[in-house]
Image (tube, rainbow, N blue to C red):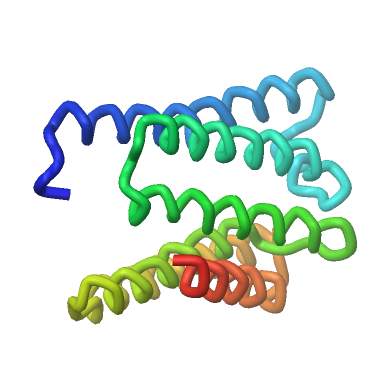
Length: 167
């Protein structure tokens, strides 16, 4: 990314922030308030489909805008991986609650490994850091009694495998 102009990097950062963090958070919060649900209730499997759809649509809009802005493929493919991970988690959520938090960190780990193979660098220290964070995320989901060990591990594996294959 060092070869890209600063204004271009800023544009990418703003688009990604708006469509993957700010907009989904605001829309999901508004939906939760409209339904009169607490944060704990939103964690129930049955009440997660609309937030999944909101996130998937926001990520798709981000991908579309970045494609229109001619963002390099190696950057845009991350959004494709994130979209696929979210769609698989949403589909699984119909029958079984899965940890999207660990799917996300699994996606980061898979992306790191994929990019290390593509760009020929040693990811070991970054990979160790991501695995520590993944352990903390998974543990926190279980301590909060939001997921079982099986849901946490399955989420991580889905994210990791999807990212590794797609990127």
